[in-house]
Image 1 (tube, rainbow, N blue to C red):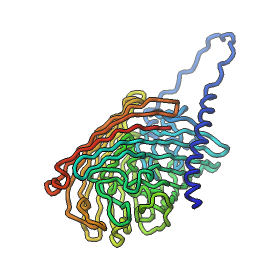
Image 2 (spheres, one colour; image 1 turned 60 degrees about the horizontal axis):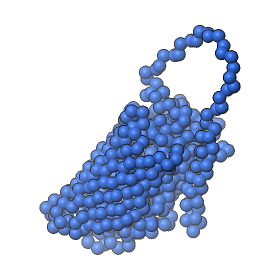
Image 3 (tube, rainbow, N blue to C red; image 1 turned 135 degrees about the horizontal axis):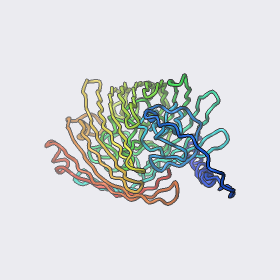
Image 4 (cartoon, rainbow, N blue to C red; image 1 turned 180 degrees about the vertical axis):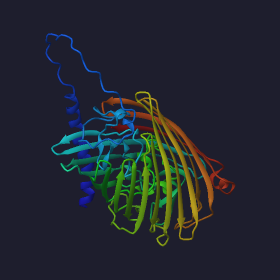
Length: 474
């Protein structure tokens, strides 16, 4: 019961602390103009040093935190990405913009959103993304629903004199309010709403407490660092960043149908990760609880460490983030407690600056699940989001999966194997209400492609649409 009360308070209080402090900091950012004085006689001035063409590709030195509000590629006052200088990550000497969900990496040129403040020895950060969505899915297996999704996150960081860093993070979601059966999403499958029947053609809601984690990082040299990460819940070292944290996906309220191949382990109840980083290369391993969360979305489940994963990540330049990972997962499905899985994942994320405020981010990812019977199912995803400025974002996604869950009966199990595809495209328009607050209106349209064996069940190739309003605090 204490956890149920303290977890929401942790995230909310961090965000509440950050917001007013941020405003106060920004109010005093610009120093007062000096009093007029007589102009001195001109003097010769040495020429500025020549620009280092390689500086942008060097990892930044570890720095003390700075405060600011992220609004675009040049996120915070005092940040200069072009020279390789940025607010450092709590996990090591690289720009915070490289950090995504858990301990995963995205390109350095991705945006880092957050409102920052300083309280004594601690730097606080908070941000939020909340969507109000109307969802319509066509066909005999479709449905419609209005729901709220998104997340609220707060973090507290302390840097020590020896160069080490402690970071505490809490992330909450309003999604349990939509009900245990989630929202309509054709071709999606995974988890359960009642502990008896699988969720099919629906996306399950995420937990109220999406993350309660602590990390500790220490530099070993100018090029090497190590870190430890613990979460209850948290995210192990597997796959690309979770879809709601990927720059190419976060503007869409539609969950990908590849979720249970690529990033469904982003909420596990019990995870411990150790990692080593040298410049743009990161090697890490995790032990974690393999079972996915049950249908009670408000509780904290008992931690176990019965599964493991390894991941290698490489950021060869500020525009790219590459990873390959493997996981041995014990009994991930609640309705199939005797069946284990092995999973592979590989992905390439790319982010490119567009003008002074724009960003173009894309992801290409592959995942494979293999069960105890050596049956393998592959999934592919490509998605992109283009923001020419801080007002408009256009996004698109295409996916293909091999699945045997769409005709599963009561109690789960496996039906015939089908290859199905889905594509969607949408856009959102944002208006800035305050320096760190934006309101947006958006829409998306999706089409589904099913083989002949599923056409009767789905009424051909059904389509779907979503209309949404969102609030962002970043």
